[in-house]
View 1 (cartoon, rainbow, N blue to C red):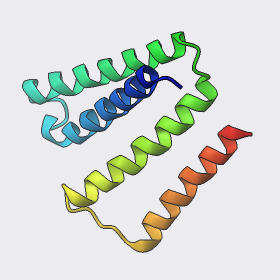
View 2: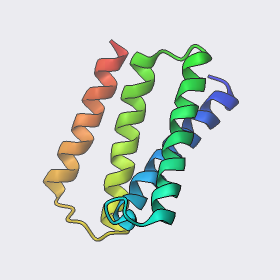
View 3: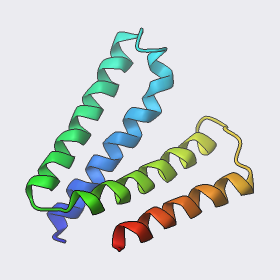
Length: 107
């Protein structure tokens, strides 16, 4: 993968994580400013994914990798920023699931 592809992948994942982190501030999409920013970030992420697909990145690899990385990032964000519960079993199961997703996508 080229540096441009990696950069686009990271930007797309970052936009998704940022959008999801804004969801509590949207108050159920009733507050205009955070809602618009959340939607804009989701559009930017989808645009990045579409461009990666156009460059020939296999969706069967792209989506599992992004899903696992975004999910772990959001869990980490929830723990560090929103004070969510972080039992060792929960973290272990989430990491294990992501590893299995990565292994399955490599088959």
